[in-house]
Image 1 (tube, rainbow, N blue to C red):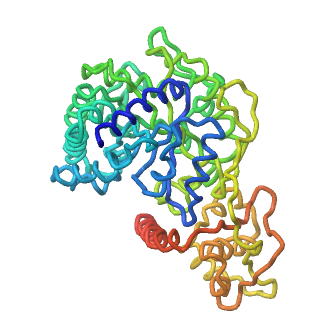
Image 2 (image 1 turned 60 degrees about the horizontal axis):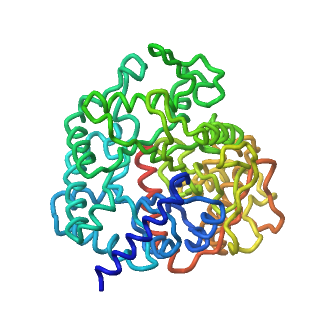
Length: 479
């Protein structure tokens, strides 16, 4: 009976793959205090024409919502599980049974990939996962095959790498090579990918190239061809996306794996939290990206369509801001499921707002602000610091959408962020008597004072622990 169910699932995967070949994927994260109802999110994805979803964990409510949707799924394994999965095959087998095969029933989840870890060789991790990534991948792949030959041959194991795993000393793609300190481990993984006929996943971020280097040519981050660009032999690169992608191609070629398919695991542009993180530039980036991908021309070195997962779906107000305040603002949708700006994923330039998540229930229309009677702002600033250490205040920091606010209004923003994160509880708008509730929206211009969504009690109990840990981690990282 179980074998028959798997065969039905395999047939559905074959039928789905015909339709999804040209569809975009999107990264669906869950690091927010108030998650949107997963079933409503899935309905929105389908309505907007998305065909693939990449998850960072096998979160049960998301997996259940994806069942029967026809959306192709890449399910992720967090880095903190790599050590156990690498050292204990029994754990890998149990993980596959619980998070993969249990969903492969008729009308279940169309799982195509298992992403083992997330950017595990990132330079800032200082080698923490270098020794465990390959054996964890190997054990998960074996567990998939041990569950059944059909499952093992259809569901591929891969790992999303940050583009910092390779570099070019000359900045020319032809000199691309893997970092020397991880080269041996990378070669092991490439061999596994080739044997399993799995893709090489890489995350490419032109935004980071621009934001982390003041000398980086601005237009090179986009697709308009207005920048100086890079000449490499007979090839002229007018955008960093192509140059980065071909650097990966050459790095693979030097190790004898030029035939591996490359999938872009993450690419996008944040809309807040930094000098170049805004809606205008995000729209410019996505417009250029979609037009480029619609042509199906690939990169100068390797022609043909490229499979891409956009990053990301929603803003996530609990993400670590160690890399930058922009980390909480990558979504093409706001935290409440509303689209941020017009776009056309077909690449035809016919921009219009994507369909929002429907039926989202919001908390009462009330906000917490600084009481107008308060004259001693120095005391209020201490309350602001407390609020911001326990809620998201990235939008009022330098170069962000609300940084133009007067000090008193910035305090109000912080008070409200804390108040909304605590579900508008009466105690959450006290601040030693300096907070007061209002029913008139205090938002100013492009600065949105959030009104939080309703979340079930179960969601909040679960998330309050994870959110607290994430905020604590961010605090110590930034010290």
